[in-house]
Image (cartoon, rainbow, N blue to C red; front, side):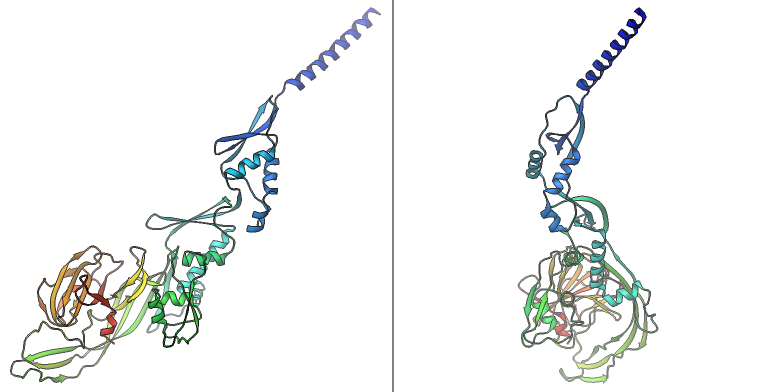
Length: 485
């Protein structure tokens, strides 16, 4: 009996200890909560991280509808740190949400693209899907290269050059482009389709470009020039036109698209072409002949030159011409005129101007409005750039005159200007070396310098200007082609 009582007492004591221990553990073990921080500022303590995330998503249906997404996330910089504490005081999810909404924008899942340019500037774009940017970039390439040419290049279906023609050797985007998946603040410009992004990559804006109503007698070249865009930009903005020679009709609405490309589409092309070399007129002087008594002793005829070269285009504009070879198919025969009184007059003619370079040339930039390849600014290129004759090839005086300037300017490099004493001045820039001095009288056809790329130039070429009146001192530039047409 005594032994039974002892066992029973032990059982009761064990049960009491177990009950006391259980209550002790229950009363004194800490609970788990989450401290909410926004950019290192504490907003409060909540019970559940998932509950706040779910509430943020449920309260932002407008962003889901606007961007066509299924979920909205917390702002950048929002951190929820897990803590164990005996303090049971928490902040409501609704109050935390309101504090967040006042301080930072919520986010959605997408992609950030960074386009790093040569000048170290970076353009940042946001899209919902990575493929949107890829499609937009491809559309931009097609715009500058041409859809059919791009397709032939990609599918390796270009025709081989047999006699003359062109073949694309390479197409690429020159900028360094990086991409990463991130949560994007809803306040950023987020592209939801490749069409809008294509427009931005090409024009620098998604806004509609201005329109122009065609008037009687308008040509594509005139409309482009009067609206300070290039012919290429006109054709890009109006893809229904295929050439600057297409006809316009009165009342027709055309788009004046001012491009501001955010990527640089580079196309490297090899070409072989036959170029007509216009004959020039040589004058011989006979002191025994009366002034004004001129005789043609040799009739001139044009020559033909086969030229092969590599041409680098950036966004549809020639950036560099590298001559490969030249083959004379037919020699040029100059016209020879014997004039009375053998001397070099310092007054130039206003007719029959000599071309300022040797044969095999390419016009790399015309007298047009364009984006300056050096500064990136839009401006009138009030000259013609003659490329393709090669570094060190001769530059000729187009008619008689007196050298009015021969020096160096940071944008023009080595340059020469000639006063033709008939109201006209001509200027020749980017020379590798000058061959005349200030005040020197030069005859038509005199070598005044040699082609180079000094100053602001992306490749060797002659920058050729014609002025009426003194250059930079009251004069104004005209289209050089007016003296050759």
